[in-house]
Image (tube, rainbow, N blue to C red; front, top):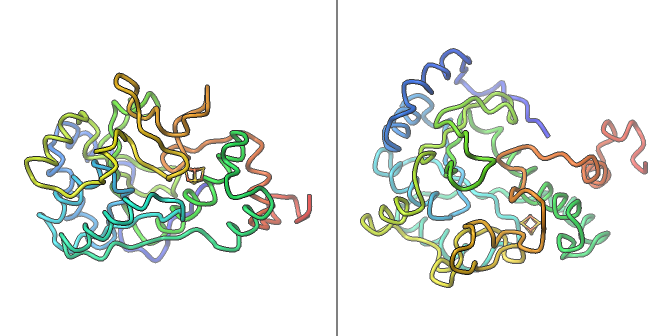
Length: 273
Ligand code: SF4
């Protein structure tokens, strides 16, 4: 679902400007990318974090450049207790107010009443539906407040991220700017930074987790498994993505999403179609 750019935001970017910045910063350090973005976008920039280690590294780096850096997260309502604990620790450690965005309670209520609280285990379309309602729609709403967002994506996390640029136009979100300062980092480099800089991190990593999302959809991985193998582990031949960082279309969940959100336009005018 594509977002429209927020006309009230001050920072207007052109594809030419961002293309030039992407080329100039392709080999830059994560701190240099963050410093450029903070200087360019100011309060219209935010780090979007699910409080995995990559996000914690970015918050640490950014807070050292600008102690007033804005950070937001999506509270899906199904996060592990350890993630909520970490959010509080980050707030205290850096003295920053983490901005929390929640799913639309009416839509969640309709979804779980109709399909059950653990609908995601039953089939892929219901899982994608839940991710849309609990993650993608709140993200779209959050991004309306910003001109640029920073993510902790890395190229070696999955094939869908292998071509990631550090600076890019985000056409899924109205042409705003998306920054991935850790695009060329390895998992080892992330952990080296966490340890040498004494950055707070999620306690679940000590229990075998290598990628952390919602509690019912994440489990620890075995030695040698892909780092994202613990995400939606029951699915086969499905992308290890929720739709926040790449738009996903199946042709099925979208119709149910339209029903739940009572989007008459998407239903051709009939809310009961
Ligand atoms: Fe729902 Fe699981 Fe997606 Fe979280 S990760 S939004 S619980 S399907």
